[in-house]
Image (cartoon, rainbow, N blue to C red):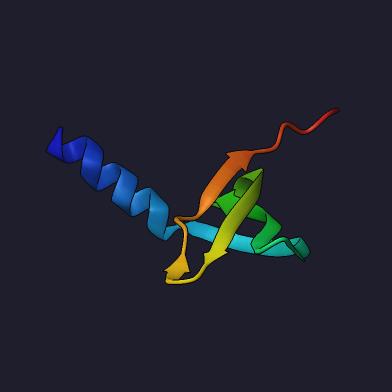
Length: 69
């Protein structure tokens, strides 16, 4: 279990943020798309949102976007 956690942590250090786009604020919700790359391969696109509340922000919520080929 420890080895697996170490591997995930090590891989996460090699995560690269390639781009942020489609930034939008609507009805106190910030939405945006992220383009990520792990180990310079396997590009992943995520759609994320954060709700802007009176006392702060909601947790970041992201969902992987399926890319049509």
